[in-house]
Image (cartoon, rainbow, N blue to C red; front, side, top):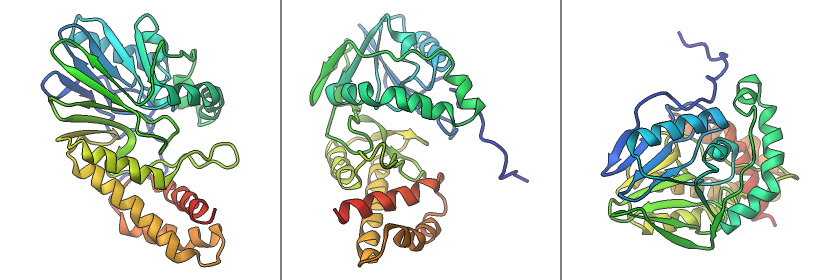
Length: 296
């Protein structure tokens, strides 16, 4: 019998071999452990691109060691967005190139320190991983798109505008048709809405839907989500349809009622309709976010 009250496992990158999802493209899977992302490694003949680090220096060191087990080429690091579980192991790579989009750097400068303190309050297991964190800024920036020639292999970094955060980045490998989405897409996990008024209300469900349409237009064949199992383009569609569903339910339910009233009605109904999805704590925040957008 499963103890539903047991604490979650510590947010540690699993000590497992990277899984090959396409030629020269590897993923260190999250194992569906909360606050552990899928980490990517793309190996070219000249350089290797690491996508996300996990949370804290020990996770970052494990990611670096696993990347170096795949290639002897110099490493380049990029982070899908500023949240601690994705990029707060970057200090392990500060002797290497680190690339962000400009919006992500601006958001990092504004929010990284407050988020570090917030995450330290999530319990001893999380605080342990954040011990000794240094906030390391990138040394290269781009605006909307840049392309990296890793040597016989191109990696495109795209910024399609704010959605889950102000600086969400995706990595697309056009030859392999592989897309790393960060938290714009998850597998069987309710989309993460960092809707924390009044401190952080930058997430936008409506913009998120627009960005997912842009991701679909890339026509990927393999989609690596921020959390959850690797899949195909159906993962993008499933998240987009969920966000559209929540938006439409909120629009129908609002009709002069308060955000709390709408949330009380919709949260259990949405949970019942997506029974196989994890992290239902994000449903209510999605409802609140769409309510705020639809009601000015």
